[in-house]
Each structure stands twice: as C-alpha cells, then as structure tokens.
Length: 107
Image 1 (cartoon, rainbow, N blue to C red):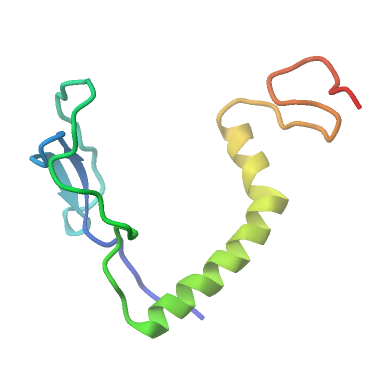
Image 2 (tube, rainbow, N blue to C red):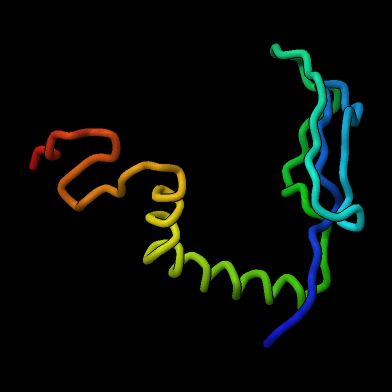
C-alpha cells in the first residue's frame, strides 16, 4: 500500500555539550551537513535514559514499523548485505570464507 512519509527530526551534528553545530531538516531538501568538531572523550552532561531516541508514536505507526522491520530483516538476509558490500567495493563471503580473507575458514 503506497504512502508518503518523511524522516523524524533533522540530520544534525551535535557537540559533546549538546550544542547543535549544524543541521538540515527534510523540508530543506537534499543537501549535506558538515561542521568542525573537537575529538575526545567527555563525561555525559546529562544522565543517559533507558529508552530509544525516537519519540513515542501512535500505536498504528508502531505496528506498521514492526511489520516493516520483520519484512526488512528477511529481505536484508537474502539480498541487502551482499548488495551493500558490492556497493562498498567488497566481495561477499561464500559460506566457507571470511570477508577480507583469501583463506578458507577451518572446519
């Protein structure tokens, strides 16, 4: 069943203190986001919550997402990973090989 959708929120680059350094919302159309960031470990500013980052959505939408995840998992196992590796220029692993190794796996 066709439907229209858009991503929740925006693409963002956020520094360790939570300051948004750059962002782009869906209504701005295609584009890129970039910013200078300072690398390094920092202590969390706020305690981490025990929940996923996406806001709570209506029950019907959650059910639809669950159904899509189940269907997508099967498709990915059959086709998606190999296509992603090909697109990245990597070869797919045969059942007796490890990715990145020219030697057959033992066993």
